[in-house]
Image 1 (cartoon, rainbow, N blue to C red):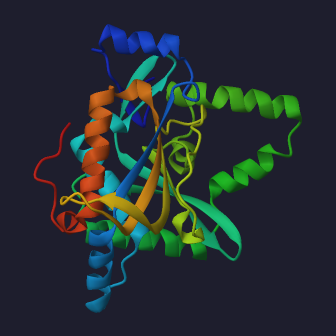
Image 2 (image 1 turned 180 degrees about the vertical axis):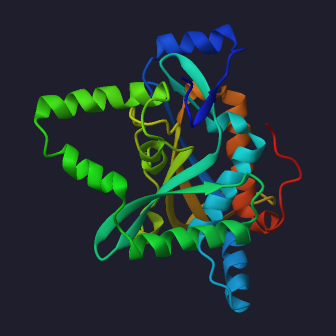
Length: 275
């Protein structure tokens, strides 16, 4: 049986296929990139929304910018398992929700044509639901799993991704597993620190990890040759380099930065969604 969450890409360039043997694990294929963006437009957008009575956060804008980037650069929505390259059937982003000094992990599924208001509303719904219902069936299964003998737990965890790849595992567990996602996002800017790099996991299928840093004044070279300290925000990207080439990744990250610096563009649907 085929996978239920993705489609196998059959016509793959030999060099891309070769890299899956050269670097068979996601953790050994990680590429780390720090991205800094001018945050003046971001601040203006948030303040403008607040002045109009709308609550708007950096996190919501980042999620909207990330899905907008994936809509133009669909290679970011790929993953590799067992030397096979897959294209996901949906766009999903996992993130943590804080509640009463605990952390709840949830996954949001987004339409690649979503506008910022649509993304904001979906994020708010996910957060509110998570705080009202902090447990799900996956949590219950993990609690049961951790009570089993070690050898049995190890066997089940070895077989889980194999069965998921063959479409034999109950899909609801894959759907709830936050590491089976297009990307995982961690907002550390709320704690006042710059964006670190997060490692990838061999478990699951997430090929992209993104950390969000705090908005801080940083020196920028201006068009007139002067250097000024202006509000800036840093992002730490960790990407499985096997899913796309260097140029495409650079173009995607530059496009992501454009949307962060000019979030007003996210108010309208994308002109085109690439397949």
